[in-house]
Length: 129
Image 1 (spheres, rainbow, N blue to C red):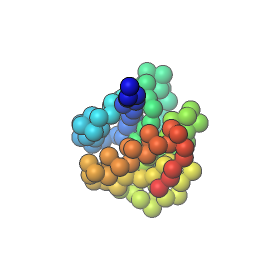
Image 2 (cartoon, rainbow, N blue to C red):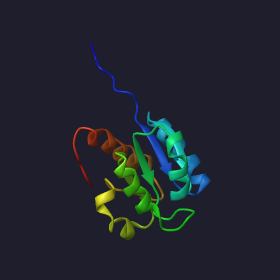
Image 3 (cartoon, one colour):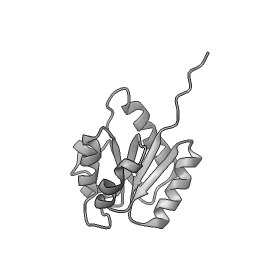
Image 4 (spheres, rainbow, N blue to C red):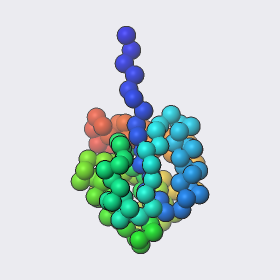
C-alpha cells in the first residue's frame, strides 16, 4: 500500500493581481493547491484566519511598503515557511532567517517547481538556499 501525501496549500503574498493570477495557475499546474493571496502585510494579518495554508510565497514590496520581510517573519512565527518571490534579490538576501530562499522575477515554472519542493522537504527538516 502506498502512502500519498496531500498537496501543499500555498499562499501568495503579492500586490500585483496579474502576477498573482499567473502564479496561481503555475502552482496548480505543478500539483499544489493555491490557498489564496494577500496584497499587503496588513491584509495578510487581517485575513489570516480565513486561509488554510502550509507555506507561502512572499514578495518584498507589497501594497503597504517594503513589508514582505515582516510578513515572512510573522508567518514563520506561526509555523508557516516562506520563500521570497522578488526582483530585489539583494534585499531578499538581507533576510535569510525568515525565508527558505528566493525565486527571482520573472518566475520560471522550473524554478518555482524546484523551490516549492523545498516546502515539502522543510516539513521533515530544514533546508535553505
